[in-house]
Amino acid sequence: MTRFVENTITFPYRRSLGPVLGPFMTALTEKRILGVRDGDRVFVPPMEWDPATGEELARDFVEVGPAGTVESFTWVPEPSAQHPLDRPFAFAFIRLDGATTPLLHAVDAGAPDAMREGLRVAPRWRGARVGRIDDIVCFVPGTNPQVDGDDVGPAAEPVKMMDYVASTTYRNPVPIAADRAVAASREGRLLGHRCPSCGALYAGGRGYCVIDAIEIGPEHEEDLPLAGTITNFVVVTPVQYPGQTETEPFARVFVLLDGTDVVLGWQPTVAVAAADVRVGQRVAAVFADPDEEIEEAGVMGGHFGRLKGWRPSGEPDRNDPDLVNRIY
Image 1 (cartoon, rainbow, N blue to C red):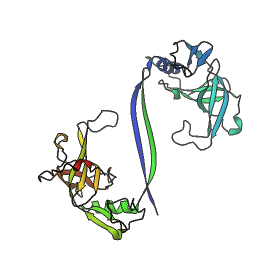
Image 2: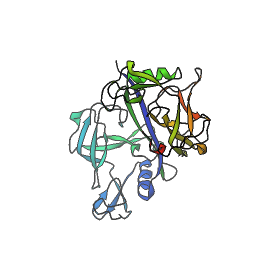
Image 3: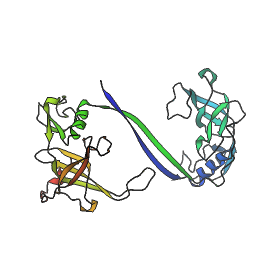
Image 4: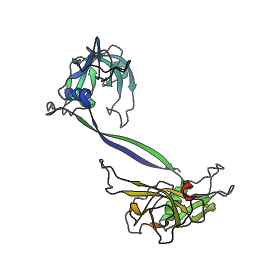
């Protein structure tokens, strides 16, 4: 039975809202919706540039709504964690009163047969508003705005910045060969497998040959050397953002294993400063001690488990100008 591993990647960042979206977000904290007027057109949300001509728009803000009319919609019967509501709802284009362009938002109508083009809707405001589009929790049928919870009032200062965390969660199947590679790492071994057809040798975990597209079983697995040579590297200078734990520059290296064509990419280094890493440097594998806590997860390049990285072995550098061409 195939085993799956769930992973979540997050991308936290902060952005400046600028002279147009800043007032728009600030108005949301006051339970007001702003558009920007250009002649007889009113854009909602407000724009800095004309979408048709690219010309800069005058910052002539005008309040619209708060009620509006559904122009089109789609029903979401099974919301995911990424959706704005935890119950079935509609995504709808809503033309707010006084606006030319529709606003895309959620409508909490209760049932799909309650939705229709021409339906009048009004915002349900969040009680504690911070200056984000989800200060409008959703729209509801009718023309009377609602407040979700206690109304704590508008923001004390104009909203100029927005913190945001984008995230993606996905599930990956784990090959049986990967589990065997992890088990080998607990014994201080690097597991490889050799294609019985073409003879190509791969780092353990993949379980198939990319040339012949055939599965490689455990009978064709063998231990890989625990020493190699750095062929390429990159030094990463950490940028401090939410969730960043690194504070000093660190290296990620490509290691060509002795006597093979196997190159392990993006490997961590151990007991060596980033400034001292170089092409041709001889290195040896370092595994975590049995009682050392370590996340037995994948490392870029195809190795798993308790492989911590690579440390200088003290051997003389390998002087080969072709090393820099050995990346994969």
